Length: 112
Image (cartoon, rainbow, N blue to C red; front, side, top):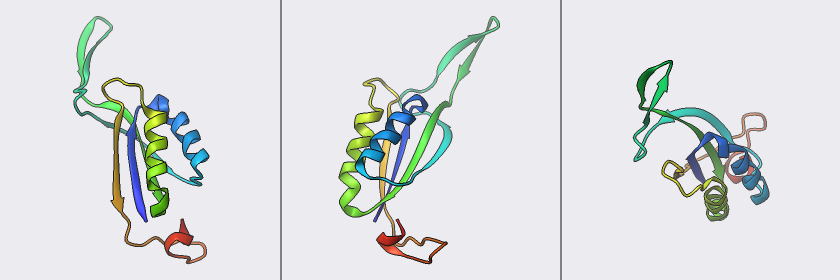
């Protein structure tokens, strides 16, 4: 089992959710986060004053998947989140040692 974590632009979230549904992903966790990478933020003008926006709003998507779904999950996220511009985001894949479903006490792949 793997945990796929994707950081994407917030306006691409619905597209990513739809793409993951088509792959067969039944659930995900989404958080509103802020951060920067190579994009490094930008300056904005507000009421005549210029200020620097260091941390940009992003959406963090976490999906636990079986090993056989990892490649399809990553491909679906890339295809649906990609704009071709700086700041499209990152995807991290980490190993999950064990998963439990609280309601039924199921563990492993059956808990996903």
